[in-house]
Length: 158
Image 1 (cartoon, rainbow, N blue to C red):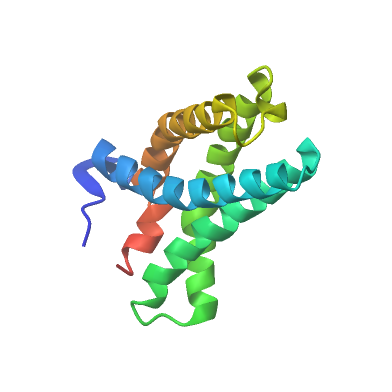
Image 2 (cartoon, rainbow, N blue to C red):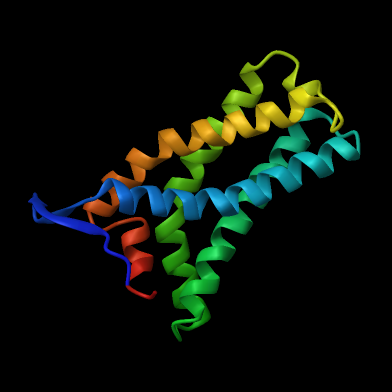
């Protein structure tokens, strides 16, 4: 089992280590990145407008993010309904923050939304946005884990 806490108590909950928070964020980032990249590639390849492309990317980020958690939780023998509740509790805030930062960066970089798949700007912007999403989301996950929320919920089943 992963060590989610470093043993210091704060308000009745153990303080989460930065390592546990980084692992939780990396787990979340993996699913988000898969969905985000797939959505952006599909929308761009199909010449969709920016809004539907971003909606597809966000939806797929949540789907892939939840799917990674579900895979692990279902493997512990938990039923589907309970596993879905665990995945929602473990990942929703983390994915939402990650997507907010990720898509915010893409919107703010001039020309990124109009870049083609063959443009370096498309790929560099996507990589930068995911890296910044990781940096911003890690403290959020640390805060949630220290309160027994977020990935602390899923760790009980790994």
